[in-house]
Length: 422
Image (cartoon, rainbow, N blue to C red; front, side, top):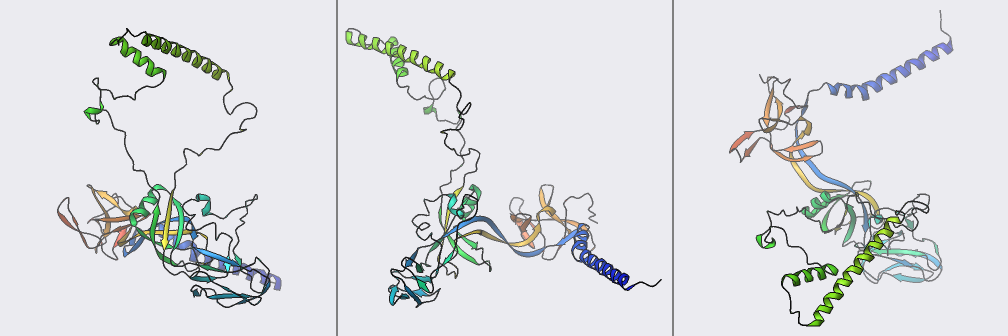
């Protein structure tokens, strides 16, 4: 039976779809499936970044100039020009406007030029890392262009910003803060199209409290213990102090001939009794009161408190003196902070095993057997581990070991249950 023209068209479309599905399977699915059955990978010499990601805000010294009078705008400088003091930048209605400081010319502004500055960066909190939002949760931040044609009084006409020293402010967790502080200088990857990397100096890191343990009784010096072996207590005050003094007077009576002293002691006893009665009344009244935060009007007049379980974040300020072409317009972004770079043979962390207390991997020899090979770890970066190549010396055992080399075939998954060492 001969197919109709419509039937041939359907058959061709079906064949085309089957071909597309087959190609998709061969290109995207098959390699992933085959990788499951691959038992080895190739070790290669390279460099890994020890890095952290964090939200940052860019801060610079800058000044926005506005028009004093309306008029036609004519720009005498172009964006990115480095100008000295008293350089003509813009002409508005025949009036020339000059820079009053050295810096780079820019024609974009965001209204935060006087809010986020080197002078305020030590006082703003974590909210400064993100653009402000309205009641609907929409970002209200906007990078605007200075007036280019016709200006009215008050219109922004140009900006001068200092590129000699500029900053990135961020807040990070304790471990990251320590790593940045100890590095002294870092490389920052800026979130632009080119992923620009620039060197930064660690300008400031919040003081990080060192972890301390409470001193036990046995660890305390003898001069901090009393005769009974217990710690000296803080001297009592108020009525308790009066009781203490009276007790001491009973053991070692003072000169009782003076009647004034007897009168004073009587007053003290009366004060203690009155204080005790008053405290009892207050305690009873407190027990009868409704607990805070319950009943009608719950939450009224309450003030927000910090979450005690929230992780403390530390202020970090990085400074840079390198030229960056987009400095005049960038404000917010998630930056990658590289604290160190480790070079060596790069292994998959999951392939590392421990045999008789020695860490190593199984290397495929020329006979196709897996041979346990000791390694010396330089650094662990996520799921990758950087190790020494060729040989390394172990001081503890006073032994030099032969280790992995570039392009060695390494057993992917740890464990020796399926290893034939020949």
